[in-house]
Image 1 (cartoon, rainbow, N blue to C red):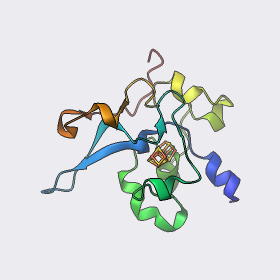
Image 2 (image 1 turned 180 degrees about the vertical axis):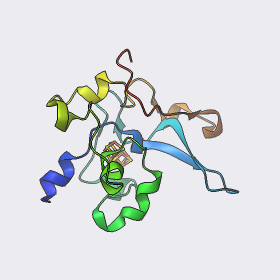
Image 3 (image 1 turned 90 degrees about the vertical axis):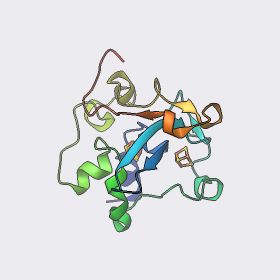
Image 4 (image 1 turned 90 degrees about the horizontal axis):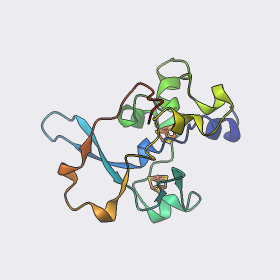
Length: 137
Ligand code: SF4
Ligand code: SF4
């Protein structure tokens, strides 16, 4: 797979750009609606994609070699689905040919994310991410 093909697998949902909390007792991961400060919430794109790991040291550059990180990716993430041998979902832009389809299906964080600067307490910002498309989102 070429670099371009690998990058094209990303559906643009930006779910991975939400801050997460981990339960220290049992390791469960919880997503919050607090978005990384580098995320353009409306477009769901990183504002500084090329410099992201310098600006945000814990931003992970996904590759086949770090598949151990895939467990905490959302279950809808194409990289996780690929690693688990699952097909791309029907709303994925590579399937629909429409980059907006991830937003139209309500999978992206466009309508749920908030700037991290506006959230004081992450424990009060925990959300549940739907696995199913919501075409009314
Ligand atoms: S969760 Fe996966 S598919 Fe969605 S933006 Fe992140 S890397 Fe791309
Ligand atoms: S630096 Fe960019 S790609 Fe990384 S988590 Fe933040 S918004 Fe997402």
